[in-house]
Image (cartoon, rainbow over all chains, first blue to last red):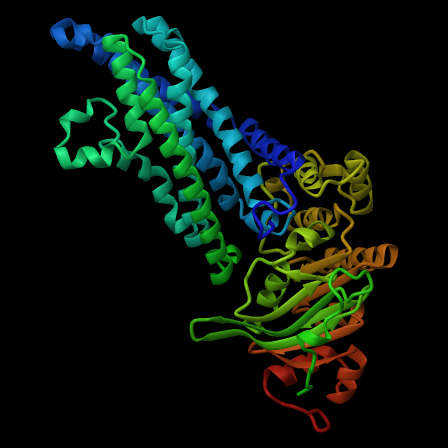
Length: 272
Length: 264
């Protein structure tokens, strides 16, 4: 892998080669394909029935018109987006293939773009059936949200990529001993991103932290849309601005960690 | 011990086609208190096969990894095919390749899928034809559509060699290419390395513990010990200098500190 992230420009044929590799991997294992659909489906069914139960017994939730189901789906976009990115990266570590890639002409930016494409593909396989289940069982049509859905989706997926790039850098530098961070870091954001409750529930000082996270804007925006039928374009614009900063920062950190891995010889030891 | 005096000033002009395949000047790599490679310098001419010999921990793999850009040197300079590494790696990575038993090919993909992906990464033209040719040359035809993880050790080594040759590299780095192979398969792999060098005129740097292999393949041998170069010459000259008939005996002399009269 070239040490210069952008030297000589980006080559689509190298990105497509990496996407093809992950596509082959995905198709080579039906349990992995099934797993992509299984967990999101389980999530939506569990939380959807819970929302049905609560809405029959509480006036507030009856008015809340699918905020719980909507939150579950948006959270899954965020979480599965990052997992889709990171699992493709981990495949290289598990396969001890990083050495082959690192000394090929593949550039870091091309590698990361391929991981982003795979995150979208894996997300589509997992989340589209989930949204269809929400329509069938809980009368919640995510696509009925229209344009705001695109804004929510983009902001959530950008954050998931930033987290994915950051944790991939950590694993590159510290080996598979750091793998658990891949699976758990996003859950650390969950209480602060206010997935299931409004920001105002948090202590005042913690609200500043929450508003530093782009997903908070998406979940607040979703609640505003579903409960007050109001699209908060200002929230989406702010989230987008923070996301741009996060993406740039995560890419810079990835390059620093890659350089550190080269300095410490970690790329030769892709195990623990 | 042989003195090696190459310094950066003697490097060939950047990017020149007649530059040496590999030029290494005063190269060192320290990990905290450990000196993995200590002030190593050498120059490898194009079209040659050079053996990098040494026991475990001698610094062979670290030296090769620095040449490939996988490890950053603590100090010193590397130039590959006339370009500084790792600064100009984008200029040369497509013209070189490597094979090591310590780096796997993805196990769940078939041989053909793996070769297709690496062929695309290296922008190989007429890729299907190239894969068919490699399958013929390296006798991969019977298992081209089988998952890499289901192959025997010998078959995996041939596939790894096919990956290393997919872009017809001008510079081929081989780290113990016949480790853990049976004698027949190992001999077969050596034959193909020789054939490839003759056909393409490629430069090959070969790290190995296998002394007969080095004697058979290499024009030149660099012996490393504790990160430093102990000797650097043709196999015949080194054996003569140590008054030995095989490189294995020389290796044991060096490893056990039995320097022969006449060597310095």
